[in-house]
Length: 388
Ligand SMILES: *Cc1c(COP(=O)(O)O)cnc(C)c1O
Image (cartoon, rainbow, N blue to C red; front, side):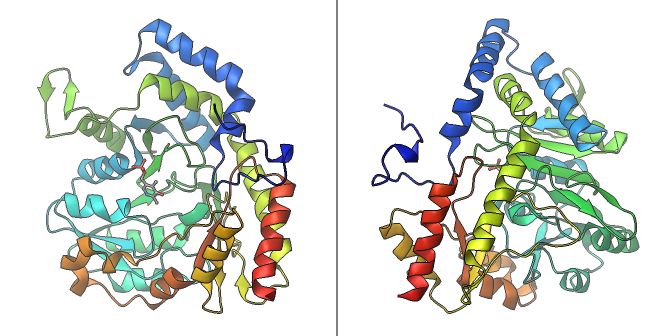
């Protein structure tokens, strides 16, 4: 039997999850089920109208000229780097505090990942460290809009302009977030750089029921290359201009995403409301630092990540686990200290902020279906931990 996702039925049996995709599905079940059957009945499983409609609607929502679906967020980053013509030996700057995918594809393509430190408040790439890492070999910067808040795209783009670099936004965690700046630049995350990349992994803010991803760009030429690389390097069927890959968003996922896109702003709002409830609940806990809200960005809270300032982060995680409350650590190890990236270690600058964050951060349950009962329980148990 499926779990119902209804915690209110029995308060003694709290089934609290980091992400509750079942309750979210229940609310849109009818339209989703009907649409999936329609796609299956149409036999238009690869490319075709369902994918095109979703790409068009997402482009409209984001205010970007081109959206190109692909198989997942990691592929989106890889295809972007291939389409921009990055070559072995080229250096690509990434934050040291991110999910592995961002740096993985750089290494996979024979490019050199250069990891730099992040801002202690926003957790996003540190602009000064980024600029200091630029060399004659640098070709691109990959800012990650971590946990749902945008990196300083104005400063990043100004710097990239100055040195002639590409900016590839890793927007896997911030779809729907808005960037603003005093210099007038504004827009949705993922639409400001040369290419934006996103993931539709089920637990992302706009998630499908399997794997999926997309790339965004306002540049017609880059869009044509992205399409070509993702489609076996062909611009015309059976004529292959470059070595490409096979990376497609399938029609069933696109149809699901097209429905969920209509709720995305509502979902973001639900996440923000839940974050505000946590913020209020923890405001008197001196050992905790709740998430920073940058002026230059809305926050879509892919994750609610706090800092535990008294060195007891791991104890808190274990305590919560005993109380039936899941908590996660995003991320426990700085990228440069991962075994896989040791070969590049001597190229990286020191990353004291990243190191410290890896010891202090804790992510609490965050999703669109959190109710106040659950949040009150979580908040009271966190407070109990610090009072005991
Ligand atoms: C999820 C994620 C990815 C990768 O997306 P997949 O669809 O899982 O390949 C890349 N970067 C970041 C920051 C992510 O959170």
